[in-house]
Length: 588
Image 1 (cartoon, helix red, strand yellow):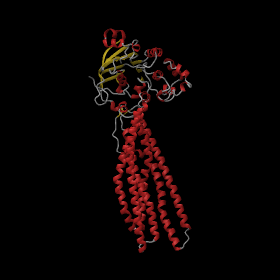
Image 2 (cartoon, helix red, strand yellow; image 1 turned 90 degrees about the vertical axis):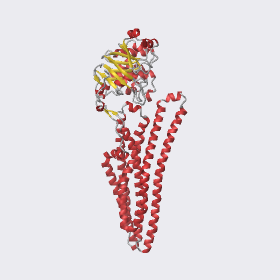
Image 3 (cartoon, rainbow, N blue to C red; image 1 turned 120 degrees about the vertical axis):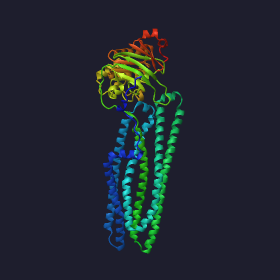
Image 4 (cartoon, rainbow, N blue to C red; image 1 turned 30 degrees about the vertical axis):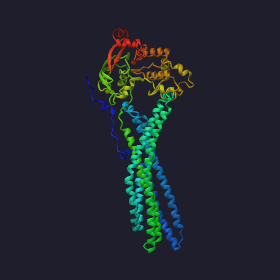
């Protein structure tokens, strides 16, 4: 058995370990550090003007106590208030703009990653959770990151400066203040990690809710036809209840933090007021000094609250950033670069063994080998579970064989750059997906440029010209969510037309005629036969009518190639094929 060399590491980006939340957050903020620093500096300037306000108020009190005119100090105090407010608002605006840029970059980077994930990764991950990471987690990041940055720098510096000014006014009152405020630091150290964990659980629960909704909407008609609305509603309600409980837990810890901080600051105010009054009565300090100290204390209270809230928001933002980092760490393909369609290719499987990457999965292929020359129509038939569709997935490199080799023109597909490989292939899936948008959008999907003549050609070949003729806006008619405004047969023909428009060297069709009526099936069969004259066409077939005209038929059973040959020869020498043919291959 031949084992391919380990070349995949050069072709795909492996899963990367997720960064811790705080490191992931700092990495996201780093590109905006200049703008965020400017916002912090501007906001800090406003805070500095705020620090000067109690001194100006002290001067007002002193002047009034001496009987001097206070118009000048009052005007100065007014200017300080207005200028401080304007600068604080401007700094907040700059920080918010920076946050929007951070979120835009995070969403763009994550979208780039998600659309390049390897197929097994997506199949083993809830799509709704990935959607939640791109939407709600990034929104949470936008809401919390500016507060975290502002608190970390602005709030801390201003708090320190305020404490220094209070110490210059009355060291005794400052010591009493710090003794009470120290409790806040202990509280933050205990509560902040719990806020982060609770927020992470909440975002995970929101992801599960999105996954449950995506599951129901993805099978919307089946849900209704099965009368399963209540069952699916209950599943959504359970997910919503889980999100509520985790959200309440996060809110509880945030409430504990905010409430305790407010109570401590009120106690601090009462202590300073009582001790300060006693010091004024004893002559140890003056009334104006106590007024200025209290004003600084009033300014300190929201600053401490800002620091506590900022640390809480830092935990929230870190939890969101960690989830984004996890998604960015999922294994992805490297599909950069452009490639043009090429000539027909020969296909060969050499002792290919494969099992789906999930626990307990039985082997799908057990030493599959065959060779198909360039050009011509080859059909794959066999009972359900024989591994026919998986052959196409291996050619497209949606999956990698466990051992053996898949060759195109004699070269292992793992040596092909993905962009070049998939540019050579036209692929029509079994369920023939159609995307929301116009019919033209779907036909030209993934194709850099399409001439109108080419579009008209594939419309005629697939008999879609008759469909577009009766649509109200022709090719520019919207087809609805997942093509719901088209019939099953029309969606199938759109998928085939899209593949043909690429002018591929290799056309892979996974039962492309299953939903067509007899007339359209015959027409599309003629189209496929015509394409096979200039293209290598591989068809997974479930209908006898599809395979009788094939140049060769590959019969598969239990993950192995049982026989290869034309229809008449296989009817004479292969019992399984003859049995399938007698039942019109419908058992597959």
